[in-house]
Length: 251
Image (cartoon, rainbow, N blue to C red; front, side):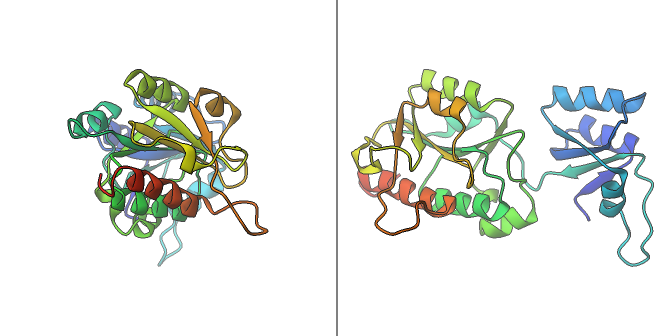
């Protein structure tokens, strides 16, 4: 795979060169010498590190034609398909006099859903996406394809703590609105003309309890059928276009 860097020194050099890394895979139990140094560098740069069996590293680095495994030395890094933005950059790019609109992901791990939401968000004029460092869909070629290229346009910020980020947004005057089918209040009762961050949760568990506690409002999409909830990408589209409607059809 062309987006992979493997071997201890090459991965360390990639970090030092400022290349944006999606995730680092390290062989389970490896922690001595340079691997310990690599872990510290990854922690300082907020790079997700995952311990995996050596068999996975072998599969990632296997030559498709000859079936040979590269000398990965127990370390493989996946280079990010996009350049991430800082939260400050997203805030600074919101046009003066216009209410900001941000989508926050809490546990969305499916790349097709993530890419689909990114596509809708870009079309709806969302100013930025915020994703957690862990428990999030990777921004890879599949996500880019599902987004129809939107992930190359809309700013994406990767953060270590969703809760701290929501508190920062609240301090900047944003209301935090959770999309959850458990709410008795519908999205049509919410005021989206204010600066707003919409939180979308995972398909199976929804938004975590810790994040829900920080939200200023919880709203549901009214459903008339027998199925209890929408796909998260469809739900995000309904939410975002209610914002567009309330703001006069423009962002």
